Image 1: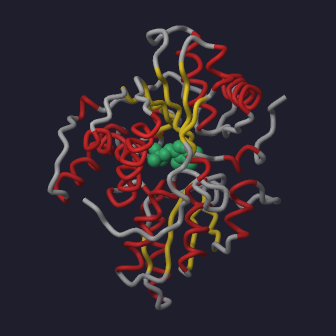
Image 2 (image 1 turned 90 degrees about the horizontal axis):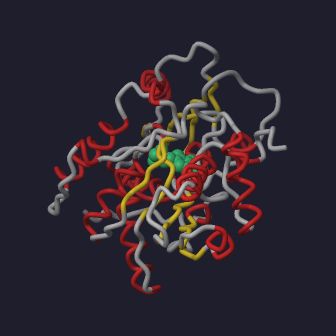
Length: 325
Ligand SMILES: *Cc1c(COP(=O)(O)O)cnc(C)c1O
């Protein structure tokens, strides 16, 4: 299934060895730099938005709405993608308007998005987006809804394509991986990675570290991911065989809840920063990197395994939080 895409990212993103970190642990560790996709400080949503924005343009939409937390990387990248494609962008953000804008919220504002704050008693986001669409359509706009995190089949295609990109780099650099770690939250990235792994015959075991509390989900994440895979199979000539029970989600590092910084994230951020000069964020990649570090330090994986950490971005959130000392 190959759809046209609206170019937003600098691809391929770098794949490189973490020499400093690999010296401190009995593993060979690599990193895939989707924090360097290039769209207004990058991140994994850029790959999804290449397909989502193209779909909006193909269908004649002129306005895009999506939703997220105030520090949503997805909302910031959507605002940037809309600016680039000359689409009007509206963001439905959780909570009350803060006195000062920082991090992703500040960038979304600078990128020209219309910001709507849900207030304390937030309705379901789905309902809120439908109501906002109604209002904007009544003003004569044609409004395209991008789901939270861009996680539907169209968005996930970005990560199906990313696996083909990874496969090519693995061939070029003559490496294969035993494990691939990444942060999982709304599921589109993982769905794409799982489909792409099958299509490209990448045999690495996938290690998706769940960021949110399990109780935050109305529908279990595995089900959402399975639904995207089913939709892929219904729309593609080449289907992949993945059952609900085959969908891994590692739930050992999420107990503090979404966006709460603990000693784990603090240590992960400082470790990668001070061994490699690479920044991870407190919400997603810091938590996922901690999960990987913890498993490697405990020798949970066979010694000398080749391990890939997929850096999915989030850097602007780093400066919107405090409490790193
Ligand atoms: C959104 C996001 C993720 C998770 O991707 P999903 O497709 O929502 O599971 C991981 N890392 C960062 C930095 C993100 O912004």
